[in-house]
Length: 368
Image (tube, rainbow, N blue to C red; front, top):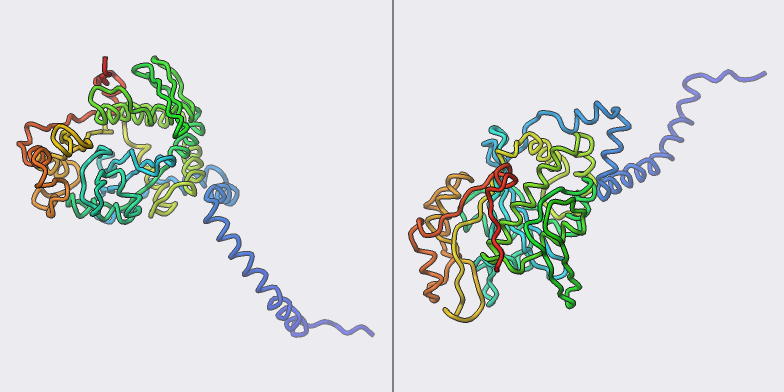
């Protein structure tokens, strides 16, 4: 006669089975978590499968606030573009995102800016990241400029190229023929003037080109304004919510940042709401000088009054907290200190919007 299985009789075998499987389940969960951290695009696919595409898009890019350490609706992020070949961050800017007014202010820091972040002879700001790292550079600039910097992001040019390709290219008007060859760096730039769609490789060429601008590095940053304006316009026109999330997720594991994936997605959401007329770009005001007066290395020297005023107006800084240790000048070099302490009227930088830049308000002059 068969014995009838009772609930009590089933409990012990099930409990034993569960305890035997628990380590395997734990390992699977840990493995899944580690994989997701290293492959952020997996999270995107997971949410699309779990919630359904429409609900997932709403969840990932809803109308929630962007978290800011300042608590003022403004997030300030130090953005650095690294040239892997040289190891320097030749693109440096502070992006201030105002989530209440839906505005963005980009303050470009010339790569040759003098800054005493090290006791070594080389004191151009583009070497700070290699010396101090991301967090160290963020902290140095925050303390020296007297502003709050919430985060830092480092993007190398290979990732920029991938982003452009994911967008289907960037349509822009290249202002002049660009030709430059440097066999030592395996750098070869050849672009024709005129309106065209730049793919990822061509976009890298445009951003890296620095030869022949009448205003030297300031001219190169003006060219970057044109590229950023074209990139922003293309993103607004060509990427929907799902594509924006996918781009952020796919690129997140390839950048260096102290931001989490959720913060990056929130910023992307906020940026989608910024009109081109509310995207402002300004180069930090100053002028160039050589270490030996008429010879030696060229540096870009910030003008104290003009820079402090700009930071106060656009980043919530205070004039009296700018450069307390005077790291942006060298009193022993008269040419440096003269620019640093000159009247603000002598070193003004114009503010450009992305809309105005694309309409031709910004003239990028080349050496004739």
